[in-house]
Amino acid sequence: MSEILTFDDYTRLAARTAVFPPEAGPYYTALGLCSEVGELAEANAAMDASGVRAELGDALWYVAMLARTHHLHIGFHLQRVEPRHDGDELFIKIVALSGYVAGRVKKRIRDGDDSVPDKVITDALLALLDIMAQAATYLGTDLATIAKENLAKLADRAERGVLRGSGDHR
Image (cartoon, rainbow, N blue to C red; front, side, top):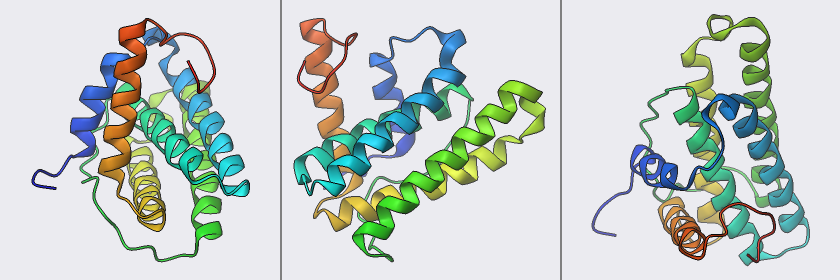
């Protein structure tokens, strides 16, 4: 790949497909991340490689929208990262980190933004992105490719007017 896609680039491009009300952002993005990671875990358990790639892309979208909603700058390059864990452990870590992030967002919603410093959420999102990048490499690709596939899928849905709705086959 001649040009490295950064997470901030992806976030800017992915934001074009955000159709949730801005005031719902903190709730919507944390719940969406947990939902997509659940689907990712199901696809992994079913050994559905194409489903895992798609759900990893969907989870990446929610990570991006979480960062955007909380006005966080995440300096991360979506490139190949050698796995430091086996496949199942990678997906368990993605589930655990997603839950951790959702818990920090919940605390912010309940106790105010100052209750959880931006750095805590930024560091958790960076750890999550690192594990997601390892998972992409484990799948034989990189997170930049998954991000581009996700953007293409969302652009297609936008063109067809089906960003709103549910299901992977819209």
